[in-house]
Image (cartoon, rainbow, N blue to C red; front, top):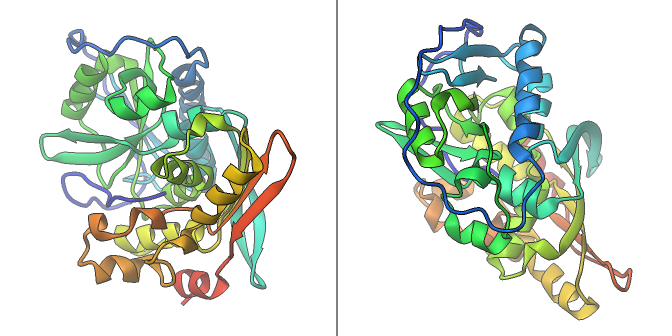
Length: 357
């Protein structure tokens, strides 16, 4: 779910992609140490996401994305900053965020009698694909450039040490992919900064960037329907490694006129129109208690479009109840008993006010 405003060195216009490549210059090896790799790993997250990025580059004209090599060799795929991007780019962007361990497809969704375009997302590796890769937990700040980073490079760099200690997952990658929700494209300075933090040379890095108010980014944000449920479980103290599989749906919003409006719409698609189903290693009593706390409706800030909530707190995300960020409806099935516990409800009125009015 989107919890930040797209960052960068100021707004750029979106008038088509460059598609140009600059000659790669030799880059010095990065010097920062990466934490030792724990025992659990082996899903090759970065290799999977790199293959998706290769497909995006090969299909750049079809997907309306731009591709360039920075002077230090880093690859940058523009899915909506200067390039137009689109729905096709959005699917691959969402899949790259999940390191190829999540399946993302389009599907129509009926919410209170209104049919919206939507995404369906499923994974058999929820903790790793969602929390170790898809979650936008890396604050990338180099000079005056800022963006939140998601994608599998996080599992290699592990700058979010507390989270990765809980997940017990890490990998040592030869190259890495980082997705940036940003209004401007990363520069060679940004690539150098990320390389130093991850112990990789810039030429071993691929960045995929798109602003919130773009078709592609709108898709990849609402494709976080499972991640938001898992993140709230983690916030509530539940071990997300006990979640075996997940499948969920969320509406895809129309593109908004600004990043702030887009943040409102993408959040509302999950808070008021999203459903997530999880199969969990837990007994019935534990799941019944957890289900009651999981939906967005369990928060005191629930009930109005997210843009209005944001304005109510004077634009300060940290004043918003963190327990608001969760799917509208959650289903938890016990792997042991087979019983399912459902909580929450869709809210077609608020969703319609956010997307259509």
